[in-house]
Image 1 (spheres, rainbow, N blue to C red):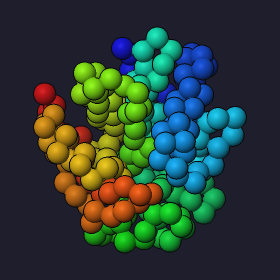
Image 2: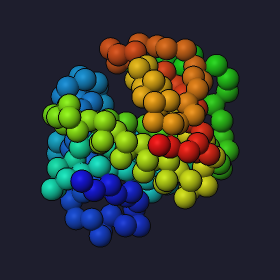
Image 3: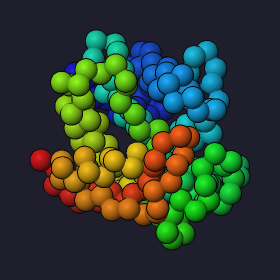
Amino acid sequence: MQVTTLSFDNLHAHGSLFADLLRARHRTFIEQAKWDLPAADGMEFDQYDTPASRWVAVHDGGRILAGVRLTPTTHRCGIYSYMIRDAQRGLLETIPSTLLFDAAPVAPDVWESSRVFVCHDVPARLRMRVQMQLISRMVESGRALGASRVLGLIPANSPRLARRVGLDCVPAGPVMDIGGSDSVCVNISMATKMH
């Protein structure tokens, strides 16, 4: 099992890994979760997949097992900034604007975590290991990018897993039904020691 942090600067060095990640997102979010998202050639993408973002991919033998996107909260592209803030600003129809208790942060030391997934066909005996690899690299990459915390929109049961592995993860908004599943915004400290 390998974990790779992708950026527009290093995509060329990783063959089809980025396209494979977007294909895995398509299977996860469009085919299985039935979300209405942009797609082309079997790949899911949106306005937040820009050169400012980074993508963590857990993969094994050319197969994507899990992934997450990290986006700086200071980024702008046209009218868009980052997914959680844009939802709060009412720019996204599918995510309620009441997803946060406070105003969405815009700060160089806060990054957003989005499009978090573990592929449905990852065997139960490997899921925890895959999740740990994904979380560990997300924290490592976040720290390397200068993040002191990550703001994420995650499944409502995920904070239990985060605490179990040593992440300081606190709700930043109410639990809401988003796309047919309970989700919650959380603040994740990058200072936490994982175990």
